[in-house]
Length: 302
Image 1 (spheres, helix red, strand yellow):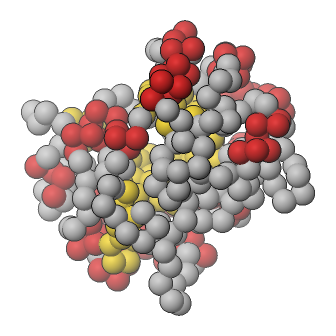
Image 2: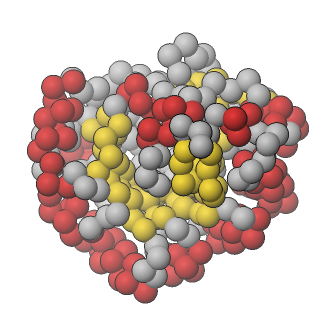
């Protein structure tokens, strides 16, 4: 058995750069080529992309260069952004098509567009629902930028009630919370939030200065945040900056693989050719990716 063995290989498709919030440390900013268009806006192209990436990353594909570096039993397509639910009219179709081809599916959202009707439609077909929640404090959320153009803030109590109810209907659906630790929330106590939502996984991420250094926290402050929440050590997964570099498989809105790293250009990223033009194998061939870091992050499915 290979040393780098995981239950699931996760492919993150960032559907859009657009978001109704304006978080100051958001990394969802990609270099665009003239005439390029977000794949999600084309239904046929979206289906073709899903088909192509599943064929390449399916378990047991010996033509995939990762085959000799790690093992995985299943593959999951995670819909991300920006805010993917700005395309809420497309999400049910994408989830169904991805499931049809063989993917497990998941979604990461800021929760502001997650209506009860939409959640009820997609929840039975997803294995994970991810929420990006960086503060329970209204002022902190405003300063972070987690507020829409009209000044609207997330109604966390209403969101929590709806999610808890939906998870009771779909017990196989798992909940993950992502929290980006920065100078505006580093002293906050998330005990009430985490206890109330009772997630299967809480990912605590140190603000990654890919695009800028705004709101970055010190080593000591980040560690103090983690230690303050030790009561949740059985569900939290801590990711510092070094652990996030070159340890994700990511696709940008234009349908290109992209990767973060220490020596990348173009908004901090390395890009592949468009997958639908070059094919997944060719597009992925020159991407830097650490199977070791990935396996360390996904020693448990997250």
